[in-house]
Image (tube, rainbow, N blue to C red; front, side, top):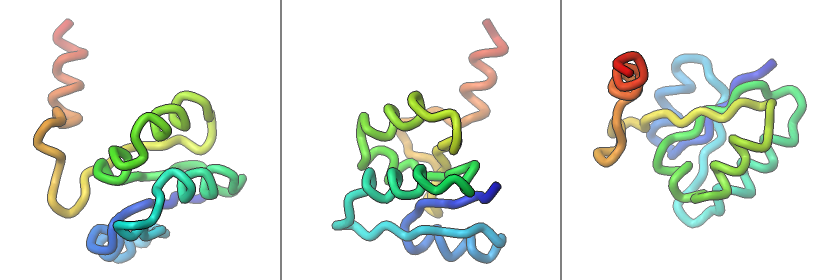
Length: 99
């Protein structure tokens, strides 16, 4: 199974250096249609999507996450870091374990 990252151009460069296949989404391009095309590829098992692009896809991103078993969609920070309004993964895990 392949890993594909859906990112902005800056983040794509960093991920390519790490050996991860990337799909760059430009500012005017519709994110959801790109995600659907990748989801239809049976070779893809994991899709990394930058938080900003996932937010641009809106509720349709969440629908893909909930509807599909494979590929698995995961939000990642872009080269600018985690969005300020969002808790980090560590904060989320601490909240879960603290219950």
